[in-house]
Length: 257
Image (cartoon, rainbow, N blue to C red; front, side, top):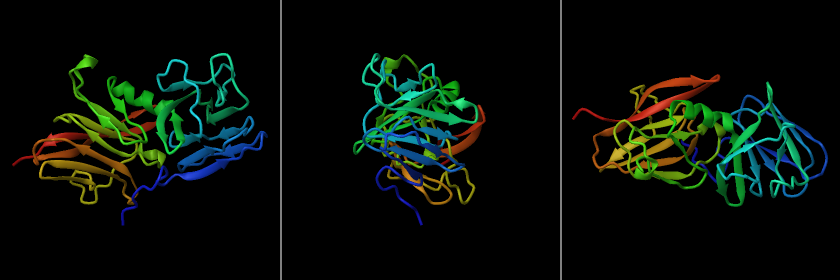
């Protein structure tokens, strides 16, 4: 049975960070945790073992000085979640640590129903190392273009889908998906018959849709590809690794007819 996403969470374990204005310590694990910061002053809390499959959820957007979606921590290794300007830090400073200490940087994944979503920036950096002009969507319903002439890039497009997070990534569409363009995931998609085409992919009457479904049946959203013919399929073409993180590559290919 397919477990369709409902709301923001689709498989992640929710950890509530209480607004008690004390220094509390929370712990991640080998599974995906969503650390949800309660409204109010939570205090200078610590999250240990914050992994690349974990997320931080706030009820207000964290200050992003240059508005690039990447938020670097201070020299003290702390994240000012209440910062309202470059000069005013606010009350709460969080420490997010992995096995090497402070993770140093998070990325913004958008907002849904008043929930602002962040995750480790390391995943996106690993993706960019392979696909410099790649794109990552948000937790909303995104309309994506790979081949926008204003970007000055004419090569294949690529979309990062961080499905390890256990969050609903929305119902997206790609307006100009072409042969050779890629979907890159952080968790392998279900392929029960091992034919290289994800179980969640269907292409009927030229309407290609990918259900982002893992082997355990958990789905984190869908992607619609606006291709003009029914003889295209999304095909697994291997994986690559960056800084001990594995990425899985799926490419739009023409099928033999």
